[in-house]
Length: 474
Image 1 (cartoon, helix red, strand yellow):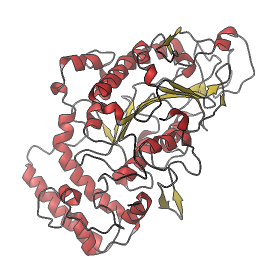
Image 2 (cartoon, one colour; image 1 turned 90 degrees about the horizontal axis):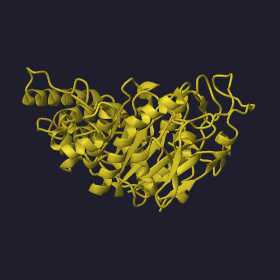
Image 3 (cartoon, one colour; image 1 turned 90 degrees about the vertical axis):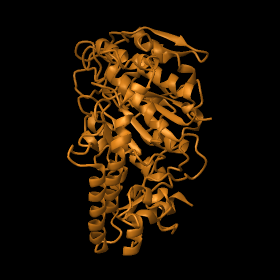
Image 4 (cartoon, one colour; image 1 turned 30 degrees about the vertical axis):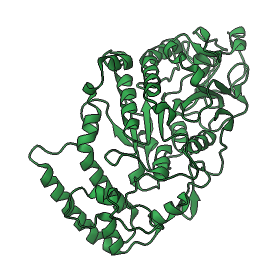
C-alpha cells in the first residue's frame, strides 16, 4: 500500500459509528483493547482507512536500511572545531582581531582550540584528546562538517533541528517517523525522549506532534525509578478494576464519537489510555538494569557518578530499540553552551558522554543492532572561532558539524568543509532539511511523499527543501 495514501485515509476519512466501534475494540468488554486495535486483526480491513492502531508498523516507500534511530543530542551546541574538525589556520592566527557578527556582541579575537588532536583509525579522522573512547569508532562514522541553520538563538535553533522549522508548533522528526512507520512494540511508545536533567530549552515542543495526531508525540522517560510520571496504578486499584474502567471509558468515548465521526484526536486519546495500561509492566521493567551483567553496567558507567546519568540513558536507548521502539532521542545533561571557559565546559561534557557513547556503539555492534539502527550525534548549531568572555565561544549557526553511524552509513567518510578558521560552511553545505531527508531515506521513506494535510496545504518534515546526502550512504 502506498504510504501517502494510507496516511491521508487513516486520519482524514469520514468514519461512521460501525467503523469507530471496530477501531475502538469490537467487543469492548474483552481484555486488552490494544490487541483488538490491530494485533488480533479484528479491525476493518479497508485499505483507505489503514490500521486502526496508529502505531502499528507500516512499510515505507522502498526497502529500509534502518529500522530505528537513536539521536544523541548534545544540547547547548558543542564546538566541532574543538571536537573533531581542527583548523590549523585558526591556531596560526590565534589572537588576531577580525570583523565578525556574533550573537552576544563584543567579539574577542580569534581563539585557537584549547585541546590537542590526534588522528585515529584507518580513515585518519581527527578527534580531540577528551573523546578517546568515541575515537575508537571513527572508522564507522560519517562526519558531516558543513551544516548551517537559520537561528543563532537556542530555542528556535532547537525547534529547527528537531522539526525543520525555527518556530514552535510543527511536528518533530520523531513524530513524523512514527506517523510514517509506526512502531514494532505495542506496549511502549513509538517515540521516546530521554531528556536533559535540567530541562530542555523550549520544552516539550521539541518532541511535539504539532498538527499531527497526538499519538505520535514523543514520550518523556526518566532513566531511573518510574519512567513516566503517574504511570503506576493507585495501590487500591487492581488491574482487573482498571481494565473495567477502561472498557467503560471506551463505551463512553464511542457514544461521544458517534456525534463527532472521524476525530483523530479522540482516537489518539483512546489509544494513549490503552498504551499506558500496557506500559505499566513493560516500561517499569525497562529501567530495571538488574538483568544486565555487571560488565555491561560498568561499560556504560551507570555505577560511576560522572557517567551515571548519560550512561543510564544510553543503556536505556539500547534496550528501547531492541524492543522495537522506532525513535529514541537522548539528551546530554547540562549544556555545551560555552560562552565562558570552553575548556572546562567541554571537558566536563566529554567526561560525561565519552564512555557511555563508546559503550552504546560497542553494545549495538555486539548485538547486531547497529545494522538496523541509525545513530546521530550533534547539537543545534556550532560555536564561533573568536573568543568570548573568559575563553568561551559564542553561538554559530553558519557552520557546524555532526556525525552519524550505523545502518546505511558509509564508514570512514567525511563530507563538507567549513572555511579555514571554522566560521562558515563553504563546501557542500548541508541544511537541516538535508539531514531530515537523509534520515527518512535510511528508514525507507521518501521525504517528499510523507505528507500531512493541514490548514489547506500538505506539509512535510522537510517543508519544500531537502536533499538526501547520498555521498555518506552505502
